[in-house]
Image (cartoon, rainbow, N blue to C red):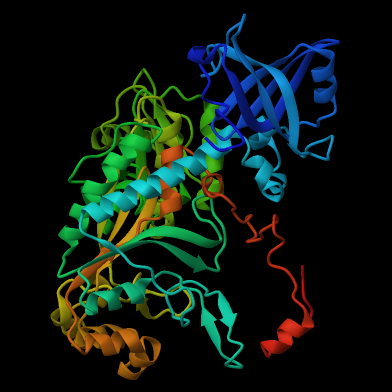
Length: 593
């Protein structure tokens, strides 16, 4: 122990009865029973201990102390008359000889009750995060994060990876999100950028002769917050392997992650190797998403041809129509309507439904438009009495999105269709290399421009000659998904300058553009680069899953709010004119708050 204490507040047991001890911590609560009798709860990082005040002098000392002050208690351990089996220290208590204030809380009222801080307004929690973190339930997530990071480091080291840190101040690079820019004082008018990821540096390490690299890497992206995304900064288990294929990357993560998830997760069951592999197009058609939750046993079925010619406009010719069949569904009409409304909010389009009742008749929802083809629907969709059929219809992309959300919500709402208490991993593979941009209407990279096209240079040349549709080219790219959450994207990298140039030419960028945008990497590859592949699972998302939390902010020590503001430290904030002058920066126009 430290010089200030002999034991922690989570340490004392029956074998310590009769001993003189000193504990330190926060005075969590005081319950007065009489004029000179009170129970005081002292809390530190390790637990809580009850202190029993039985004298006038001790009572006077306690009454002068506000809750959440830090105190030192020296006294004798004794057995409790009324034990608390819910506490590790519930068999004992301390009778104090001395109570000393170490750090006084100067406020009579707290922003929220410490042990119920998770019920408080999030802005208040973030503003007083140091109080929020005193809550053992909140602190538990941060401890979990520390343990998981330590386990990841150990596992990667055991697999022969070297932990190498890469620069934080670097050059701006077109990698898909907005950069955070840092003005360079010694170079007026020029800027550093915080790395969106160590992507280029880790590939340069491969060209430098390092065989296996990893780091718990900070990444910085100026993007909006989501439940599974923290604005500003996040951390990932960044890794890269030289002379490696997709299979090598899969083998490492399939060995590293399941034991960690099984040990530290809310559930002790995790997929074993090999994880299920699902081609991107198959995932979209079968689950309506490229991040399917495989704990749900529902799948999408095509029913477009079955409903052609009905009077229901959304089923008209040219629409994609998908069904989600839920057997033995006991959801009420009110529950179904509420679920459909929630799907519409999340997916941006309205779903439909009908049932096959116990008499074998179609009822409810859009059933009146389908009565004349009941037998065909029953046979094609495999319907049995009691089935609920959720339906999505519209243009293909919107239909699949709606159907995917519908499947997820039905799986969670209908009993028996979701095995919640497990971690189910899968790989999504064979992503399209290119897509037609929504704004440009022209061919663009679908995901990572550094990915190797499946088929290499040959397939790009065929597309250039018009022998195949470039939209059919797939990339050696893969996503790791767990319980419907995308943990990471990775790829076999395009390490050949000739293939790289040709891949960029497909999106109207020539050799000079590539040299200008990625000078270091392009030049390095010209000196002989090894084939290499990598991935970077998000640490924050992993811990969020392990902790069973819905918001990523619950597993980050000091998170920003949804507007990318640090309300604790007051960031972003204003700076002085002198600071701006030194950086050769002027703030022009109106500044909106």
